[in-house]
Length: 97
Image 1: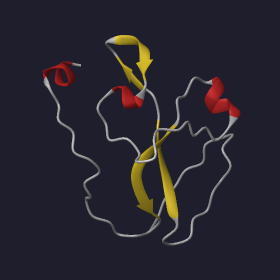
Image 2 (image 1 turned 30 degrees about the vertical axis):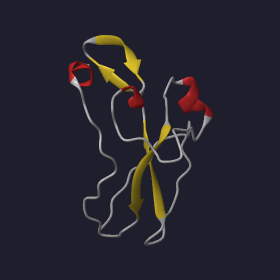
Image 3 (image 1 turned 90 degrees about the horizontal axis):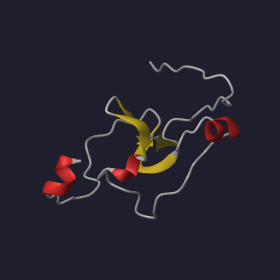
Image 4 (image 1 turned 180 degrees about the vertical axis):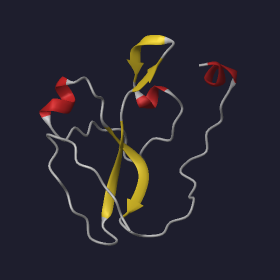
């Protein structure tokens, strides 16, 4: 069974089995900082064709959301297993952030 929820102001989207579902990322907030961080400011895997803003409506933009594309691939109602997205060498500077 599949469950979902509706967000006011967002157009409802129905997916067929196997259809690609875009997974997006947003800004990161912290109790240690007043300003949000861009998701890709941290060493997360980036999309192979580059990071692109992916707002669905004006409200997201006006609310200060930083919606970007992601490298994650999902297909509706398709069983998937873990896949490696990238390999990142994290030095001491990246770990401290």
